[in-house]
Length: 354
Image 1 (cartoon, rainbow, N blue to C red):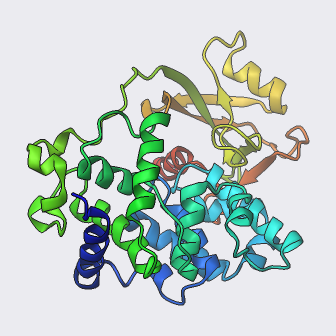
Image 2 (image 1 turned 60 degrees about the vertical axis):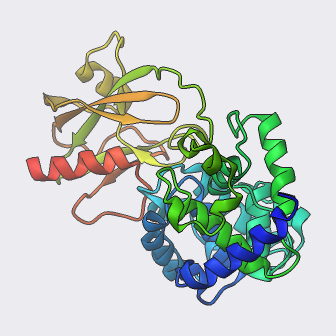
């Protein structure tokens, strides 16, 4: 085992040359900006999901200046469906910092990259290693899985003690050369071979792997103790005017779906009826309500049971109480607004229903 670090990196690089992913969009015309956007999108999201989002994002925002100068609504619109929307908000904020404080040049020093919103140590290292070949250590979920199996490390990798141990091991294994390839290689190994369902016969370092020697690869990494997720409920109102437009409200800038445009929510326990509530909130008179089937949307820390309610607003509806965070939305000619995935689903269903 004494030669594990050099043997590991050498074999991994040889394997990557033949079996790794070399045709990902962010590997073409490689730049700090393109790698940065890809790394943010890839946080908690699989490559196959990210690719079409990345390509659309690059078509609209080919550089950090175009991203910085865009409205948050347009950025969130292109992010709709990708989830974890704080990533998009932080990406937008970081682009504005790059414009205002770095003369439109993505920083090349680790501490400056780490200081940007939404970038942690592993992401900062991955950006600089892949774009510039700098020697930085990465420790994303794929790498954690590889290392916990390689060294048979017990304990949840997100815990501080185990995570610190993994950082030390990742530092030891990271070579001094070929950092661009090595960084992609170890992520590829974790994503394709040493995945949740492992393909051990295809692994280039199988004889170095303690978990394989022990015959218990599937035990690693140790899962986090699951908590029963609480369930919350809400009714989302599809307030439709005579033109067929739907009333949307912009959510607060932080929190769940921060900054996105959503349907008005009527929560359980409200003393007013839906009709009374709509008249008080928006000055709208509701002619009738039709409740649709409940469906569940799950966040990382709770389930949300959503009941869509189709309502017809009595004409004229243009006297809705003035507010900057409200808009009549034409679902046939949609604007570039960021919408939560469940709202997109509801609007598509209501179009079919209509």
